[in-house]
Image (cartoon, rainbow, N blue to C red; front, top):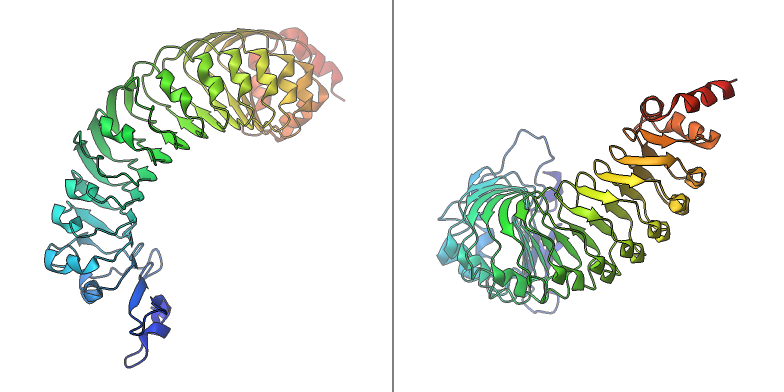
Length: 411
């Protein structure tokens, strides 16, 4: 408890560590209290909730942080969430309960009087049941983090109506199911939305993204969404990250993808997306990560790929792509991962691949039609590309002629 060595009886609390008082007020009331990490991770000590009862009487608090405090058991109904005490937190704006060991259901009345709340983090606990409607009454709430809990069930259709100031919503790694309420897609201020690793399903509504004009990051991966990618999604001009991986989304990838000028990560792996990769994908000049593996893509790798010079990860594994690897692949000088295995690629491995000085992982196996000369640079790279096991890859993809060339060039 060395973190609280300044907390001594009969001393001025405003001088204590982890305490901040209102310097503008004559009464110098406490406005910021940091009780996070009361113990080091791994200590065989847990904190009793009784230590917080006195905290609940500080009605001037603006910020309360009790994250990583390993408080075990349920949140008592007559303590932190007692209606007669929680009302004292009418000024509270920032409440952090992350990784505090809480479990059980959350009583709805807990949030009724938190009318000034801006940020609420309850992630990485063992909270279960449904999310109380009262949590969604706050028009001031900007950041809501509920990830890594045991919440479940369907989300009521009118759940998000009042969250008109919401900027980030993180609900990943729970057990929610059903469809996404349309009211979620009406939040014009929303910038970050993460619904990944749940049981949401059904088609993504066609006009779902019309109003989400501020969206920067969208993650709906590891769910049960089906249908196709709505065209309206490609109107999100500010979008930088899109992850719809590990669903059952089909259809094709529209050429309208070119409208996402600020996109840096496009992650759609393990779906049922078919057709050809649209050449318009070469318009995504900011793209750093392109992961389309394990879909039903066919046709050739578009020549426009050569324009994605900021690309670091390029993964098209396990599709039905054919024809040659474009020589322009050598323009992707920032590439660290190139995975084209388990396709139907043919022709020669382009000599331009030797320009990829930053390459760390190279996967080309199970493309029996590939042939040609492997340059010394690639062979030298292979010696340190342990993740790709390039030597075994050669045995799988190269013709006897190529292997003979390698053997003859050995000293």
